[in-house]
Length: 98
Image (cartoon, rainbow, N blue to C red; front, side, top):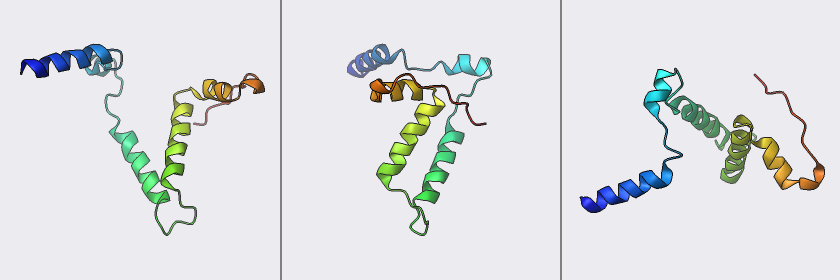
């Protein structure tokens, strides 16, 4: 038991910047669950990866699309594009779709 507690303590110490305080988020009215997002993503991917679908995704293509979409939603896409293509210059802001 002592070994498990030590390992847990090291885990908490190493990941303290990533661990959410769900009580605080709840009190501030913020979402504490990502189930609704995961469900939507699973439905979209399942639909696109059906064999009967005309424009079927490959597993790699679906993964890459989700990576790009995540960058856009997290507002990290500009930095990523500028990092990948430094000689192209700064990227202009694009309005976010509703």
